[in-house]
Image 1 (cartoon, one colour):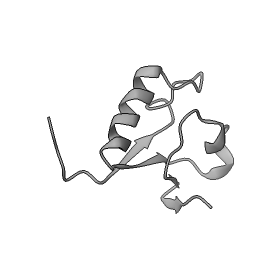
Image 2 (tube, one colour):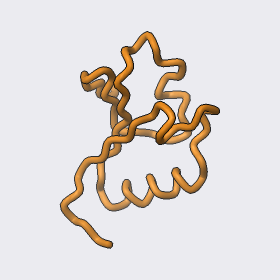
Image 3 (cartoon, helix red, strand yellow):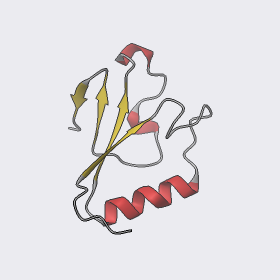
Length: 77
């Protein structure tokens, strides 16, 4: 299915995109790479406040365009 209207995608990280062992499966990384190749911006999302995050974005094996933490956007550098 081709959908040229998708420009941005948000992924919940707490037990959805990221399993409890904090390891992104290769199939997930492959799917994210396909989206990125189609020009889709990729963001992580969590409803948790920053002090409840046990892993910084920089420790994940995939580079995202930013995060939304507890409803607040956090953009890189």
